[in-house]
Each structure stands twice: as C-alpha cells, then as structure tokens.
Image (cartoon, rainbow, N blue to C red):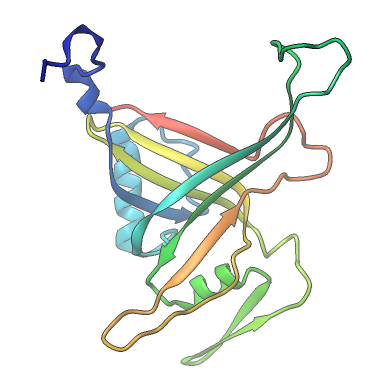
Length: 204
C-alpha cells in the first residue's frame, strides 16, 4: 500500500488540537474574569479542592449536542436549495453524561423541581410538581475539556434544566449511576437573537 501522499491532512500541528480525556462538569462556575487557560486551570483546581461548583466524577465521559431545526420553505419554481433560503427555527443544546457522586446537591439538580432542607445530620429532598423559574434552573452549567496543546475548551449552557428521568441504578459489587441530560433554556420569551449556549477557547 502506498503512503498517504499529498492528499493526507496529517501534519505535526494536527495532534496538538486533539481533545483529550473526559473533562469536568461545573455548575454556576464564574469564569467571566478569566482570560487564559492558566487562570482557568487555577480556578478549576480551587473549585475542586473546595468541592464547590463541580458536579462530581463521571463514568463514560459526556456529550455536548446542539440540534438545529432548519426549515427550507417549499416555494414554486425553486428547483434547488440556495443560499439565504434556510431558516433556523430552534436550537436545542444540551450536555449529557452519567454521574457517580450521589449527593443531596446532585439529587436536587437531577430532580430539577426540588428543594433540600437540612436538620442536624439529616437532609431531606422534596420534589415539587410545579417548576419554579427562580430556583429550579441552573443559571450556568459548564463543561471544560483539554486540547493536547494546553488550550482549554469551555461549553456553557444558560438556564440548564435536566430533562432526563431521574434514575439511580445500583448493583452488587458496583457503583450507583445517575444519568443526566441538561438542556439550555432561553432567559425569557423575547430572547431570540442568540442560542442559550456558548463555546469558549482559552489559549495558554
């Protein structure tokens, strides 16, 4: 078999742009004042040490999905699709994965419309049938992952809400698993200009 030749996309720099490992999920993590990868790593390390913001360890990594609903009107005389004839009706962005840390905070986040009350050493989670717009959405949910060259990629969802059914799967000689699927939500009914998520690259 011949070598790849001049048609191959392989170059030395390509291997520096590979996304590596599972990354980390962070709830309401404030990165607004952070401008580079070094400062972001420091802030994440502090959050991990303090146990704040992090959702916890996962199994099987995670997935970011942004599904667009694109409509091309059926117009008499239009034989082919053309530039400018496509309309984006909606974008559904979500982060999904499987958590292993069974904490009251994670149970509340995954039940979504819930509240916790602590009395001494007892914490009770109450699940409501109605959704409270002030307390039941995560204002920001982030995933941060590494590129091989030290760049960090941050994906942030606004007003994240877990739409997956709550499920705690427990097995003998195993660990309980908590699947999640947090979907981004617009802030209000007049917020149409941008989708409720963003992707940020932090260079070294």
